[in-house]
Image (tube, rainbow, N blue to C red; front, side):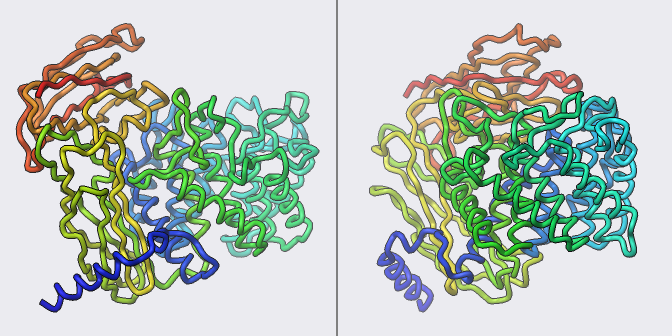
Length: 628
């Protein structure tokens, strides 16, 4: 009875709270900012790691991008004290250090010890293993970084352009990213190997060569590389090139304490955020972030690399201007470039367009996460509180009469050493209801290394008259001066009609597994990957069909429970040129069975009929027809 009275009184108190008080905004108080920043980073890091593929021990389909994503998770663990993902780092180290033919983990053959003809790819892995060494102290990681660096050193060549590392094994191009990485890698090795002079000498030589190479233009911005005549090629100023120039200089400055190096770093930083550079309306912006363009899978991660080394700049200089810019990026991402599931997009302004939508995938997640990590104070907050709702993007297709009940699970997590009695207060749209509306959830964290978590089942009831569109359900979590808001974006729909590769697809995408999307009307699953849609047809549905625009080597299966599957479409020929693209209609009526929430859900899974050749089923558009 006392607990019930406490909940009732706390519910009344929560109802009187101004709406603005429940928002996760930053103030000038570091004891407020720090816990919020750490909670945000934890939620975003967990979303990123949900895409980690443990068997191949990477993030699907991108070799160097996987190195950067793992290094980002290393940054997260180092900044927050969370150590839950050390096993994944070691899993990758042990499984992927061997020799692999082309196409297994990379388009190039892998030569062993994370090296390949792509010299910059090798360097990314070197930095990743130094990060793992910093986290664990295990010398095998540092030894691997030395092995990689020795391999890369074989491509330092003074006979062309007076120095510099070649970008590729064929020695065709000297560019900014390969040499920025080299400066950082060699300086990091020096700063971790007692008594070293070899790597320090190489880092100094590389820095001096880079500064005089001509790749830094008159505006202090770093163009992509050099021409065959060893002059600035005038190609695009990518944020990651600027970031590595800053980061390389910072690590070398730590090794030497040479004020001239730090002054050069500051000039690069000031140029980056100056006029006509990398910032649009206060937001770090890649040229391909324009709404009439789409960033490729490489460029999706460039801004995060910049922010990784910008964070180093803030920590090293304590310059308020640089810190404010970092916080501005983190706050903008959280407020403008995040969906209810905690996924972070490629355009940090949140801008989107029908033909070139804002893209959300694991690469964009890793990139934006770097800004959130940088916003966590270097003095780790003594406690933090976060929460998520699952499903975060449920779909309701209401019956003509009655209500629909959505089961939703609140997951609350906390770090620190203080017991937290957390009040959870649910807010739903007018005319909806939630059970329980308020609860007390005890959390007993025991440090930061393994955040404690607890779940709370909720039921959200939706009336049949709910209007089509997106409706927010929020749960405010409050404890010991901490506050966090978990969200679910409920889509009410009476029809199914969407292009793949867009935000309109997301609510229907029940399980993306290892599938990929490279733009509008493009979702595909190669090898052993798949993707599953869930269609929660109304409880009064009598018949239903779905039409897929699909091609390549597909298997389509249907299920009423996501466990027992029936093949309904299959391409039995090895077709890799899209020549079998067509609209194919499937009768889903046999799979209509009532579920506990009153709907009749059908699951549709697309996979690869020839998993060994890399041309799995690709879906462009999905529509459905129902009869009630």
